[in-house]
Length: 279
Image (tube, rainbow, N blue to C red; front, side):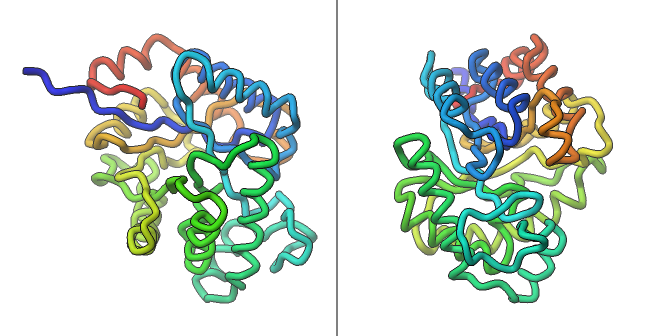
């Protein structure tokens, strides 16, 4: 007897960062090529029309989870008035935030309050709590941030699951290896803390690679699927490049390559060949 197909999450990050990214994500949801997307409530493209359009397509022909993409890095601004540390009124750049978190120089109460405010903003926009929570640039895994993130999740989004970023097995080849190894290490403590307080999380993660190198996203997707267990999660960043995106994020052309592959006939063929269903 044939075993049932594994069911995974394929999550598009960064809904709300730009109109072009939003449009690409909605198109892929409509094609049933995604089953989750994470919303940046501090992004410039999360107006009522953006939210209504996402809700309409996410509720069509099957469920698509909508989560909060918690943001704590530049060039975005906090929702709370007294957030610190800042750099020119913005959150710290990624590398500096990681450094100060490793040195335990963050105020966990301030972080918790900001994440709580972002959850509250999500609820105001969507009329309900997020299905799950993750972090832009994986900030939810950082020391000090992880405890504040999990505390905010349990207090303000009871029942939501959270994203951990540990792999099921090492990724073959060099693509994204250093980043993936770092995420593995940070995720171990995150999983322990989440398990201790009873917050559910995905059993395995894939999708990290060196965005600056571009490459064949179809080949990368095959690697991401290799060994991913039932319930595992793959992150992706599809989008159409526009001026808003160029001003905010260095990840541009690769978004269009990801979109092109996910929209192509090759992607459902790969899912069929690997006996994989989107949850």
